[in-house]
Length: 464
Image (cartoon, rainbow, N blue to C red):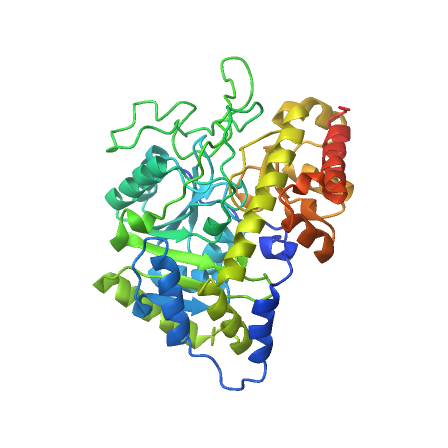
């Protein structure tokens, strides 16, 4: 059986440490106006905040009452309390956000990785998921939670609706509670269109191509195209094992698992993904409108109360205003998605020209690069795994470039996660300028940042 991943001895670099865009003046004004409040916010969020969160989800097709919602000081405290409350073992997509597995372990929950399919990260291959559940239970484990992300942190990809449909069916058949991290859902880039691009992500071992939407059928006897399901091992390059390109998304459409299996899904949204700065921790969770959902929400509220995990009053005021999505907030979200989409696509193209593979980004602020094609030149420089690669690229770029081992990938896989935030500029002025133009790639500082990125990878692989 596939054993739980061991805890990493190296410190984790959370995505929030990257910083973010400067806050909107409108949001900053609401935060400042509440700075003199002395009464603590209610644990789980005040009624007005929970109602605003319900309306936020309602505008996205999820009817949500205030009593279905809890708010907390960031997604991490909410997820930690949730995993501690639910119990059992946790299933994660490989790769996944760097903070998922450490929180599960902090809650005392074993973690089992399931490979992602070629179409994108964030959700597991449904057949590998069922096989992993079977194996864990056969060895006496107790898998209860599937943690996924419809818009993925490390890879910057979104789950196709037909794939998500099959994953939800698999989770329902296995009796799993789905925790859907939708932090980056509002950051979907404008549709890229165009033909498939070269240099895209390889198919993970144990994963299958995305099938057409429909009912799940039993996996074949071999367990998939590239190896035993649930192994999570990336395929080694070589004869007979090509690395087919993944298509560039022609249309970026994300849906929530709560639209498919409403009674088995808890939705988690960190406002710092699209609405507020990371320095203002605020997140909301949506629970199923069932007896089990109500009981789970009650238990989670008790856990939050035990550690006084309430929102700071000024942050709650800003979060309330952001969740109501007035025009300035909507405009900022749209402009930032356009800017991150432009620099993400440009970085993808620059790296692909150097032989660096990645999944085409369609959401968020990250790009997950695979340097397997450059293993020979890297070995001559003493770079044999993602730990070495992280160290070297961090030195060359002058900012953290976390290796794939921090996201659940095996260290021997030559992968790193790149943040596209620095590509917009080195300070608030430059980043706002990139947001305020429809052609950010024409700005000198953006071109310079892309040139620096390409030069670091080019020199690393003895190219260019």
